[in-house]
Picture 1 (cartoon, helix red, strand yellow):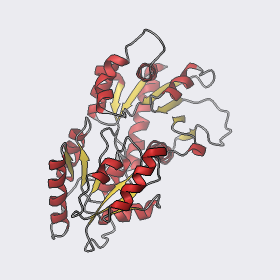
Picture 2 (cartoon, rainbow, N blue to C red):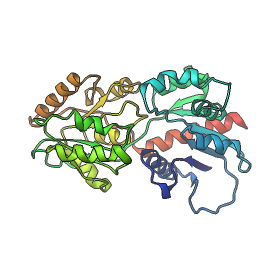
Picture 3 (cartoon, rainbow, N blue to C red):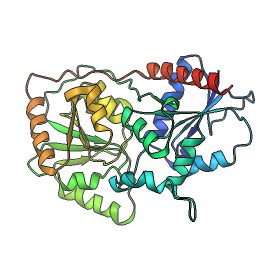
Length: 331
């Protein structure tokens, strides 16, 4: 089977979690014996594709589908529904159906999703959104979560307690609010990731860092360094109002480190899979209480038992099943 993977930001312009997900998926599929070509790579194999798997239902992919002229084959789409705000998510169902005037971003998302022979959701919540918002038939949506290859090393957790927040520093992940809301009497907060803010927001970020003695920004670090920080932290923190299924969160859970994340459409499904390894908050009071609880737990001898996420090899195996069923229906 030959599969093409399409999506993400070109490497010369950066990239982030989605690009990592595509790379991990490519490796997972290859481990299952699939011939994988990632769009933008130097692969020159001209043999026809059996299937194209598109990641993201964004305007770029909408434009690709409008101009798809060669390698016509089955199409699988992983929409990865991530929005800039809760308000945008709540309006998606209605905005995606507007037919007057120029095509909206929501309309493009709907177009990409409905062009697919099969759709892959990251969790049951996203599956329900796809059916409710875009009218996707239930029989053409499968749930395949992301995976993790992070392995606990029994690293020493007895040092000074700290919390970690990892990912590109940007508006959607809202690290600016996290820093503002991090009191002076809290343990250290370690930020990891490249700076994606510009202009005034970048200056505000730098000013906040200077004013907070218990907040440290390390920039981008190696994967092994990030995993070590996650394994020894009290918890991984996410302040974002909108996430698909964060790879950082899954790696933390795989390392038996709890996660503290803002309540969203996906959190109840994370809790159903990972139990009390997932703590959520909606208000600052909830957040402060959870941080204090996690700090107390981290310095005790008791640790949570957290179910492990799928391995990426298992993810690849599930996707191969989706591909085979899709080709069986479309040919």
